[in-house]
Image 1 (tube, rainbow, N blue to C red):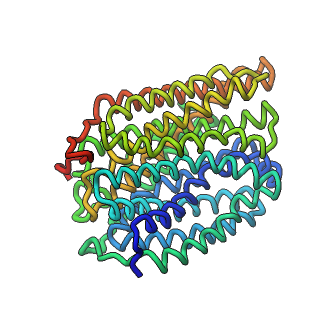
Image 2: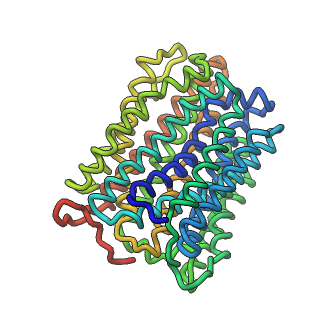
Length: 474
């Protein structure tokens, strides 16, 4: 059955993407309840978030390429089915180990869903005004889902149980799977081969996963310890071996020629540090609001309510702005606003106040994100043919998720190290000082991203009212 409107297709895949993004952040507000319920070691609590983000990011290239080879619709349905089942099992977890392992598996399912969903959007809407409009809505879903996750997580944890943060995916997953099966049209086979480059997939996934693991464990091992240096070197060697494999493979997982497009390279390099700062900020500010300001899970979630409202209202304006002015101006101004909003958190006090210490960030951050993420996706996917839509989608998602996982590990490590080194100040003072230094690290990430955008991103030429990226080099 062929839908009458491409926007029906968009709604179906956007709901699937919303589930993926929601589960990145919905657990943040529930972390104290999960820690108490399952008796988590405080040092391993971040793995409730990191395990998901790590496997999600590590398998995205494989998921994107599988979608190009076997069909975007088919891979989306496979991932959605796995995601739904694993959500049910996570809600039934009885131990920290069980929860973390299932969250890691859920991340793999998400890695099949996300690039498939975005590539369907790219195929459905032609480059220019309509795609920019669709990607404006996509930005609202992709970045607003994080803030909605904090709000919904607070409501579910307060009035039901932390387990409902995962149970809620089950009816949504079943319903959207049935709708996609019935309404999303079948597609023609995009490639003539079924070679998935499993050696490349194994190398890049193991290299990225090991890298995040090393960064997250380094504070306990010591940054100059034998374990840190040995496993860090191994992760680098695995990634070098991946690049070597891709240069020689007849059907590479990631054709290196795609990076000849300057905007694709620049957008992916920008995306990692921006998401690194954002992931770490959401995690730490959730802990600050509940642990220092002593907000309930519901009030902690409500404190982020302005975020999705502001983001949603601005995203479509950004779509029109990119169509008219190109994406480079926004990829410089947007990250600077994000950095400014995060800089406000550097001075968080022990006796903080929501309206003076948190609210300015919650208002400024979505403005900067709306100006950043939609243009970033346009730059990262313009000029890509249908047979590489999954690859381009997987690349930008990989940059975001691995940047987020590494950023969360680094910012958590900075916070823990600073807190430990200032223990003489008192537990609460040392804790808040750790958060402050972590936020400063996040600001530095965003500044690096801004510099990359200024140097690497080149605005596409305009044709009429639409912006078209050059397709040469792919």
